[in-house]
Image (tube, rainbow, N blue to C red; front, side, top):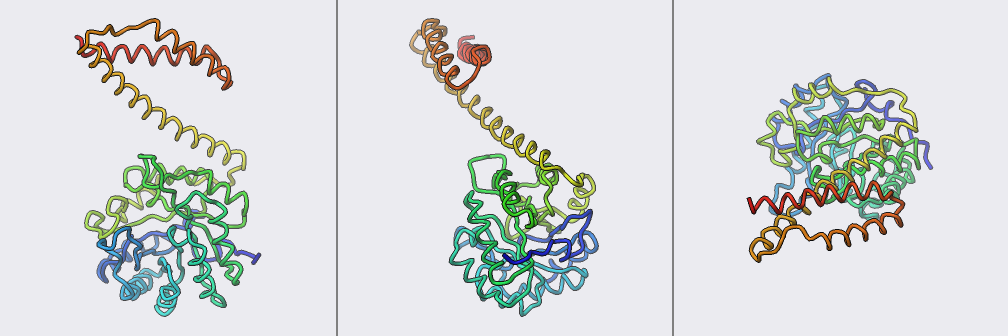
Length: 352
């Protein structure tokens, strides 16, 4: 493989991190000049989407090639490099014509090896930093394969962007599944990984805690969608923040130096526990809703709430299953007795 250069050699960074900020979509010249002035001296690179891969064709799909001029001008105004997403060789050609400094490959493109290979071939002989987002599928080998395709054609400045994965987790737009970037780092410790907290969160209120989680896992940088008027943004308004909010967030984040591999593993395992605990809470809520339905049915048909024979049989069945799963009888009995007690209370509520 090509000897990959580290991200510190590419752009100036803050607190040892690469901070990429700017609007989800480039919308106008005035928008970009305003954001450039607000981000001057505060971030490493200005990002802006020119072509937006939308789910439906009726949605705003980006301002198009004319926006590259505004993005470049914004970078020159702020004295900062610029980056945008590309999905086709023509996108790359236009970005190079307008002197855009770096490009990223989006999750929907990375999932298709044919598209990635076509882009890689278009870059042969060109030295431009390439950031590769994780694919929409939780496939670390597909992610790594996309990176390797750019290495193969001689690109020496390649980094990864962790932007999360579509999931049923209601807490995030794209569930982080931290174990995936950790595995990528294990396979290729020489590849820098930055975290796109905007696409992981999908909303402003959890950006800071997610950024801190990423820092605790030793990310090399953050991508944060920033807009002077987020509520009026043409795309992804809910996840963008103002430049002042970005500065406030950066001031409270704690950057830990030299995090050990053991700390990373423990943090990743705790993240997995958090996901399971969240799912448990949702399942408990669903169970209690069903208990309330049963209570209403029993009341309507004159059936007693407590049926000890059935409860004792169910509990004994659970205890047998628990033993096979390596769980102690005391633990399982205590948990299900508390669940049963709460269920009875729910059923009695309608009778009071």
